[in-house]
Length: 556
Image 1 (cartoon, rainbow, N blue to C red):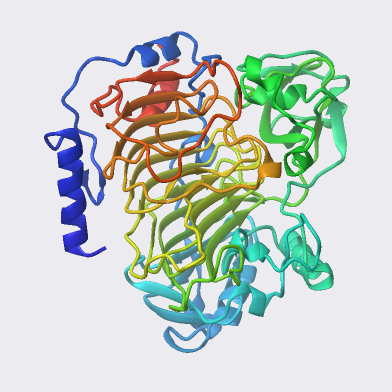
Image 2: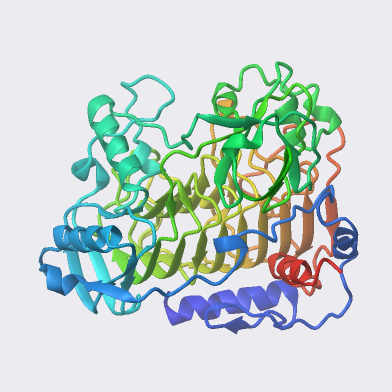
């Protein structure tokens, strides 16, 4: 981002909220605030941290529930495998050989020393415990030459006719792809055979059936037979809906308007079911199974609930210290992207990205079916793009922190859309914390995401949310937007108290309606809360950081 762009945004921010109470530290919003009055909503939350009606508990978001990621020792240098770091030849085969070699030896870091690495294929991080690390995003450049349609093939949406020419690479796939190798190769084979492949969590073997009801915030469930379970096992908790859409209504906070909402024609939404939540088993006492995290939803009679296998999942893998620089080609019209995409985590659990820059992409950083993955210290820039961040297909408890979306070097192309930071597809518990957005918006892309947080963000709110009508409501319950400065004063997708059910809009700078103006999906009261409107000195300034601290102190 050019220096004059930064100065202009600093001026606009100061004009919008008065004296500069939100300094920038290292390019991200700082943490110095004048007010010492604690938010009443925060005090409420501390009294009911697992069941608050408007604020979700996101204290377990991120790698291993919010821990710092490790720095495993270097086990391979890609130069020793024949990679050229001067951009003169395709380095992808050498990089992928190094990753496979380290993966087969049990994990470690694959080093990309400073330089430019031309890649003509996907870089696949497909082994547990493998970290692809450069010498820093300013020093190590991965420079793909081809888009995913060239490298893998045409990929169509799993919805609609196969002849429809919308490209699924418009929202998924990465030229650096973190996914279990078996899952990746099966997906590529399916795309090449049928032109479409699902992104969803797999693993259909039932290990135990949940036999009694449970409440949101509970740490235990009761099962019929724990014989196939053991502490330390990772499982999928799956909740089926009833024929009256009771589970979907519950995801919206059970507000009265869910009774009159038309669910029957939301074909894309209902296809997302069952709700799938990956979770670690920490203990077993008879038929009672202890979970690492509190339940994000009730378990009610009539909803078939079970614990299943996970299918191929990648664990403890990371990407750090690199720039993915895509070729500067014209942006395509909406949904016609060919897949100049940056970094993808798919069916990834306890993984991370750190100090990663993506430039000139169709999509920057994508999580699909990800769990407890941290994306920190990242920047998406260059020409305008479709999604800067996408969090989709039942991705849960992930953390984006210290992030930046740069002002575009090439503006949005005619017929294209830019969404910003996206969440969709029944995804829950995800957090965007401490960010700078020079473009885009808080995109809740229909598909009934719920319980997600955006906190301590400065945004030039010029993007549009997306999502097709058959994907259902824009918001589920317990979205929290906490301490957000909107430099252009546009309300849409940020001030959500009149749109999102059981939501909390806290510490938002003064805004006004223009551009995309949304109406609520549900008639009647939304049970939402608005606090400290026009005042971004709310305490605590960062909802996620405060929850993490409260969790460490035992919620006192």
